[in-house]
Length: 103
Image 1: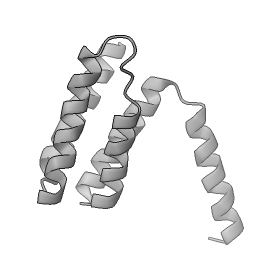
Image 2 (image 1 turned 45 degrees about the vertical axis):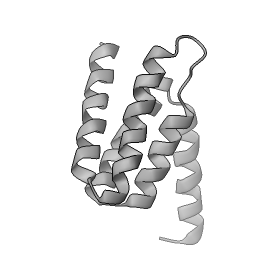
Image 3 (image 1 turned 90 degrees about the vertical axis):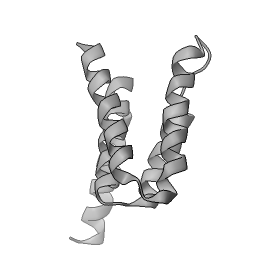
Image 4 (image 1 turned 180 degrees about the vertical axis):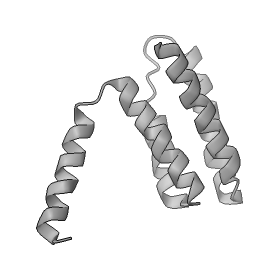
């Protein structure tokens, strides 16, 4: 693939992500996180988990975001141990629950 075409595709992907709803963004993050866990890509998975943490909103009620913070922090803590299957399972469970809640 030519460098120009790669640049165009990268720009398209970035712009299409910006038009996603908050729910679609979180589901995308979970999907990318599960893919990174399957590939045992520690760097990418760490970036995704840190992104999920930075997206937490504590302004309304801290109870729910605090629960997510604990899960994401747990995943970051076990990541250096190579517990990718456990992290993938956690992300899959969260993704499933978000999909259920959205219905």
